[in-house]
Image (tube, rainbow over all chains, first blue to last red; front, top):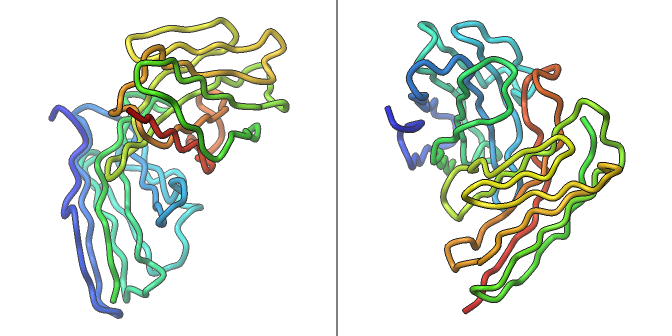
Length: 114
Length: 112
Protein backbone atom coordinates (compact mmCIF):
# COMPACT_ATOMS: atom_id res chain seq x y z
CA UNK A 1 0.00 0.00 0.00
CA UNK A 2 0.86 3.63 -0.19
CA UNK A 3 1.41 4.00 3.52
CA UNK A 4 1.32 2.22 6.84
CA UNK A 5 -2.22 1.30 7.75
CA UNK A 6 -3.38 0.69 11.30
CA UNK A 7 -6.68 -0.62 12.59
CA UNK A 8 -8.77 0.05 14.47
CA UNK A 9 -8.15 3.81 14.68
CA UNK A 10 -10.04 3.95 17.96
CA UNK A 11 -10.69 1.22 20.48
CA UNK A 12 -12.49 1.44 23.80
CA UNK A 13 -12.03 -1.52 26.11
CA UNK A 14 -13.22 -2.33 29.56
CA UNK A 15 -10.52 -3.05 32.08
CA UNK A 16 -9.58 -6.71 31.89
CA UNK A 17 -10.51 -7.18 28.24
CA UNK A 18 -8.01 -8.34 25.64
CA UNK A 19 -7.36 -6.16 22.59
CA UNK A 20 -5.60 -6.70 19.27
CA UNK A 21 -4.20 -3.90 17.16
CA UNK A 22 -3.24 -4.47 13.55
CA UNK A 23 -0.53 -2.92 11.42
CA UNK A 24 -0.18 -3.24 7.65
CA UNK A 25 3.29 -1.91 6.77
CA UNK A 26 4.37 -0.66 3.39
CA UNK A 27 4.77 -3.62 1.05
CA UNK A 28 8.34 -4.89 0.99
CA UNK A 29 9.44 -3.09 4.13
CA UNK A 30 11.71 -5.32 6.14
CA UNK A 31 11.63 -3.54 9.48
CA UNK A 32 8.55 -2.95 11.60
CA UNK A 33 8.33 -1.08 14.89
CA UNK A 34 5.67 -0.57 17.52
CA UNK A 35 5.64 2.53 19.71
CA UNK A 36 3.39 3.62 22.56
CA UNK A 37 2.52 7.30 22.99
CA UNK A 38 0.88 8.57 26.13
CA UNK A 39 -0.99 11.86 26.04
CA UNK A 40 1.40 14.78 25.78
CA UNK A 41 4.50 12.60 25.55
CA UNK A 42 6.80 11.51 22.75
CA UNK A 43 6.49 8.01 21.31
CA UNK A 44 8.20 5.27 23.30
CA UNK A 45 9.63 2.15 21.69
CA UNK A 46 7.92 -1.15 22.35
CA UNK A 47 9.27 -3.74 19.95
CA UNK A 48 11.02 -4.30 16.61
CA UNK A 49 10.75 -6.92 13.87
CA UNK A 50 13.06 -7.67 11.01
CA UNK A 51 10.90 -9.66 8.63
CA UNK A 52 9.18 -12.24 10.88
CA UNK A 53 11.86 -12.21 13.56
CA UNK A 54 11.22 -10.17 16.68
CA UNK A 55 14.71 -8.87 17.35
CA UNK A 56 13.96 -6.50 20.20
CA UNK A 57 11.09 -6.51 22.64
CA UNK A 58 12.83 -4.63 25.40
CA UNK A 59 10.22 -1.86 25.44
CA UNK A 60 7.21 -4.03 26.11
CA UNK A 61 6.00 -2.85 29.54
CA UNK A 62 4.76 -6.19 30.83
CA UNK A 63 4.09 -9.78 29.86
CA UNK A 64 0.54 -8.73 29.04
CA UNK A 65 1.90 -7.22 25.84
CA UNK A 66 2.64 -9.52 22.92
CA UNK A 67 3.47 -8.77 19.29
CA UNK A 68 3.79 -10.99 16.27
CA UNK A 69 4.54 -10.74 12.57
CA UNK A 70 4.23 -14.36 11.43
CA UNK A 71 4.71 -13.90 7.68
CA UNK A 72 6.96 -10.88 7.77
CA UNK A 73 4.31 -8.41 6.67
CA UNK A 74 1.21 -7.70 8.79
CA UNK A 75 1.84 -7.36 12.51
CA UNK A 76 -0.49 -7.59 15.48
CA UNK A 77 0.05 -6.08 18.91
CA UNK A 78 -2.00 -7.86 21.54
CA UNK A 79 -2.65 -6.57 25.03
CA UNK A 80 -4.14 -9.00 27.50
CA UNK A 81 -6.17 -8.04 30.57
CA UNK A 82 -6.01 -4.35 29.73
CA UNK A 83 -5.43 -1.84 32.51
CA UNK A 84 -6.19 1.87 32.59
CA UNK A 85 -2.50 2.70 32.28
CA UNK A 86 -2.50 0.97 28.89
CA UNK A 87 -4.57 3.87 27.50
CA UNK A 88 -2.41 5.45 24.82
CA UNK A 89 -1.91 5.76 21.09
CA UNK A 90 -0.11 2.76 19.63
CA UNK A 91 1.96 3.66 16.60
CA UNK A 92 3.33 1.30 14.00
CA UNK A 93 6.21 2.21 11.69
CA UNK A 94 8.07 0.44 8.93
CA UNK A 95 11.27 0.96 6.99
CA UNK A 96 12.66 -0.51 3.82
CA UNK A 97 15.88 -1.83 5.24
CA UNK A 98 17.14 -3.15 8.51
CA UNK A 99 19.04 -0.59 10.54
CA UNK A 100 17.44 2.29 8.70
CA UNK A 101 16.35 5.28 10.71
CA UNK A 102 13.95 6.76 8.18
CA UNK A 103 10.64 5.35 9.28
CA UNK A 104 7.15 5.71 7.87
CA UNK A 105 4.56 5.82 10.61
CA UNK A 106 0.91 4.95 10.57
CA UNK A 107 -1.72 7.22 12.07
CA UNK A 108 -1.91 5.07 15.19
CA UNK A 109 -4.55 3.23 17.14
CA UNK A 110 -5.95 5.12 20.11
CA UNK A 111 -6.79 2.75 22.95
CA UNK A 112 -8.94 3.91 25.84
CA UNK A 113 -9.35 1.54 28.77
CA UNK A 114 -12.27 2.30 31.05
CA UNK B 1 22.52 7.35 21.63
CA UNK B 2 23.43 10.99 22.16
CA UNK B 3 20.91 12.97 24.16
CA UNK B 4 19.23 15.97 22.55
CA UNK B 5 17.86 19.14 24.10
CA UNK B 6 15.11 21.17 22.46
CA UNK B 7 12.99 24.10 23.63
CA UNK B 8 9.59 22.97 24.81
CA UNK B 9 7.67 25.36 22.59
CA UNK B 10 8.06 28.09 19.99
CA UNK B 11 5.82 30.45 18.06
CA UNK B 12 6.26 31.61 14.49
CA UNK B 13 4.30 34.00 12.31
CA UNK B 14 2.78 32.55 9.17
CA UNK B 15 4.99 33.17 6.14
CA UNK B 16 8.11 33.73 8.21
CA UNK B 17 10.97 31.29 8.65
CA UNK B 18 10.75 28.92 11.59
CA UNK B 19 14.13 28.09 13.10
CA UNK B 20 14.04 25.14 15.50
CA UNK B 21 17.22 24.54 17.50
CA UNK B 22 18.57 21.29 18.88
CA UNK B 23 21.58 20.72 21.11
CA UNK B 24 23.41 17.39 20.92
CA UNK B 25 26.75 18.10 22.55
CA UNK B 26 27.59 14.41 23.13
CA UNK B 27 27.07 13.35 19.52
CA UNK B 28 29.48 10.70 18.24
CA UNK B 29 31.28 10.78 14.92
CA UNK B 30 29.05 8.22 13.23
CA UNK B 31 25.74 9.57 14.51
CA UNK B 32 23.32 11.36 12.21
CA UNK B 33 20.84 14.06 13.18
CA UNK B 34 17.25 13.19 12.24
CA UNK B 35 14.19 15.41 12.37
CA UNK B 36 10.62 14.20 12.54
CA UNK B 37 7.41 16.08 13.16
CA UNK B 38 4.03 15.02 14.47
CA UNK B 39 0.92 16.87 13.50
CA UNK B 40 -2.02 16.48 15.84
CA UNK B 41 -3.73 13.07 15.59
CA UNK B 42 -1.18 11.77 13.10
CA UNK B 43 1.90 9.59 13.36
CA UNK B 44 5.38 11.15 13.23
CA UNK B 45 6.58 12.15 9.79
CA UNK B 46 10.21 12.06 8.66
CA UNK B 47 11.52 15.47 7.58
CA UNK B 48 15.26 15.38 6.97
CA UNK B 49 18.56 14.04 8.27
CA UNK B 50 22.25 14.85 8.01
CA UNK B 51 25.69 13.91 9.22
CA UNK B 52 27.81 17.05 9.03
CA UNK B 53 26.96 18.89 5.85
CA UNK B 54 23.95 21.13 5.59
CA UNK B 55 21.01 19.44 3.90
CA UNK B 56 17.95 20.74 2.09
CA UNK B 57 14.88 19.04 0.69
CA UNK B 58 11.39 20.08 -0.32
CA UNK B 59 10.27 20.28 3.30
CA UNK B 60 13.10 21.96 5.17
CA UNK B 61 16.78 22.77 5.57
CA UNK B 62 19.07 21.34 8.20
CA UNK B 63 22.03 23.36 9.40
CA UNK B 64 24.60 21.49 11.49
CA UNK B 65 27.35 23.43 13.27
CA UNK B 66 30.93 22.65 12.39
CA UNK B 67 31.56 20.96 15.74
CA UNK B 68 28.27 19.04 15.25
CA UNK B 69 27.16 19.84 18.79
CA UNK B 70 24.01 21.59 17.66
CA UNK B 71 21.74 21.92 14.66
CA UNK B 72 18.83 24.00 13.41
CA UNK B 73 15.86 22.89 11.39
CA UNK B 74 14.60 25.67 9.14
CA UNK B 75 11.14 25.84 7.64
CA UNK B 76 11.64 28.72 5.22
CA UNK B 77 8.05 29.91 4.90
CA UNK B 78 5.99 28.47 7.73
CA UNK B 79 2.30 27.82 7.13
CA UNK B 80 -0.49 27.02 9.58
CA UNK B 81 -0.15 23.37 8.52
CA UNK B 82 3.38 23.33 9.93
CA UNK B 83 1.97 23.57 13.46
CA UNK B 84 3.25 20.36 15.04
CA UNK B 85 5.66 18.85 17.53
CA UNK B 86 9.17 18.63 16.05
CA UNK B 87 11.54 15.95 17.27
CA UNK B 88 15.32 16.05 16.92
CA UNK B 89 16.91 12.59 17.22
CA UNK B 90 20.55 11.62 17.06
CA UNK B 91 21.36 8.07 16.05
CA UNK B 92 23.90 5.97 14.22
CA UNK B 93 22.66 3.96 11.22
CA UNK B 94 21.88 0.40 12.21
CA UNK B 95 22.60 1.10 15.83
CA UNK B 96 21.94 -1.44 18.56
CA UNK B 97 18.26 -2.00 19.00
CA UNK B 98 17.48 -0.31 15.71
CA UNK B 99 14.94 1.97 17.32
CA UNK B 100 14.63 5.73 17.30
CA UNK B 101 14.31 7.33 20.72
CA UNK B 102 11.96 10.31 20.80
CA UNK B 103 12.26 12.98 23.46
CA UNK B 104 9.69 15.62 24.24
CA UNK B 105 10.26 17.66 21.10
CA UNK B 106 9.43 21.30 20.37
CA UNK B 107 5.81 22.29 19.99
CA UNK B 108 5.77 24.80 17.13
CA UNK B 109 2.73 27.01 16.85
CA UNK B 110 2.42 28.90 13.57
CA UNK B 111 0.15 31.89 14.01
CA UNK B 112 -1.69 33.90 11.35
